[in-house]
Amino acid sequence: MADSSPETGYAMELANGSYEWYRSRAVLTRRAHRVSEVVLLVVSAAIPISAVLWSTNAVVPAILGAVIVVVSGMRTAFHWHENYIRFSRAREAVEFERRLYRTRAAPYGDAATRDQVLVTAVSRIEHEEMAGWVTIASRARSEEPTSEPGPA
Image 1 (tube, rainbow, N blue to C red):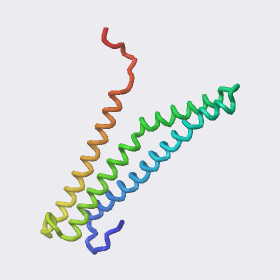
Image 2 (cartoon, rainbow, N blue to C red):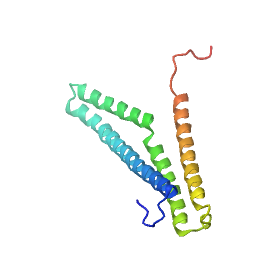
Image 3 (cartoon, rainbow, N blue to C red):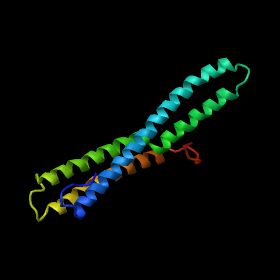
Image 4 (cartoon, helix red, strand yellow):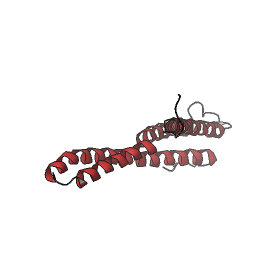
């Protein structure tokens, strides 16, 4: 969303760009999560039905089971739900700062420092969101099976 005020300098452009990025990613990850939920429910329900309809042919239930494994694996690999929450939280934090900035509310009351304060706030939000991603990625990496033998 573009700022309608004449104050569209670097600080507000940074905040607007950050807001739009988090907004668009939140929409995409929410959609991916919801689609994967629906696919898992529908395909899971279709397995027993296919087993009854094609009781002499295990191909259809096997394919449906494989679809469940793939979609479940994608959910684990891409963390759509966690990303949706993180992106939404960051988007709202940036929007909070933009509102304070636009209304010149504290800490944005001083014209000499308000741009610096906004850039600092948006950078902090982005840094915290990235730290959340690193935590999720590190946790996923540590949970990956290894080919190393376990303790004897």
